[in-house]
Figure 1 (tube, rainbow, N blue to C red):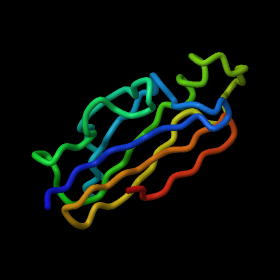
Figure 2: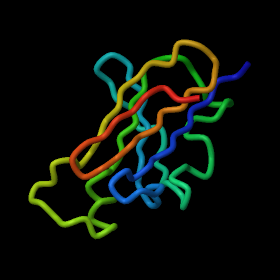
Figure 3: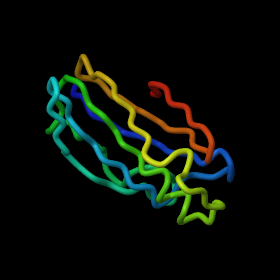
Figure 4: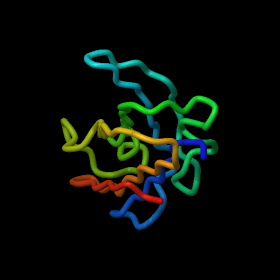
Length: 117
């Protein structure tokens, strides 16, 4: 089996997929943080391709950074200065070659994540 990484972002306050949300993927090696990819969610709140496809997959520690503040601004969510949630970093490990799915449930004042399937 080969490994790969996907996500799905749902806007729980609006009850819909979070379309147009920027996501950055970093690889973490000790104190080093290397940007691997930047992508944007589609109308279904997913990326058009795997965030980390099988041919680039390596076990290790990674971080997804969800640009929630810019997304909330773009959807017309009443602004705050600063926003309660702006950048949402989720650091996680991938220890074996399998499908890792890291979804985000988002609202202006909270979020949750889990290892999906």
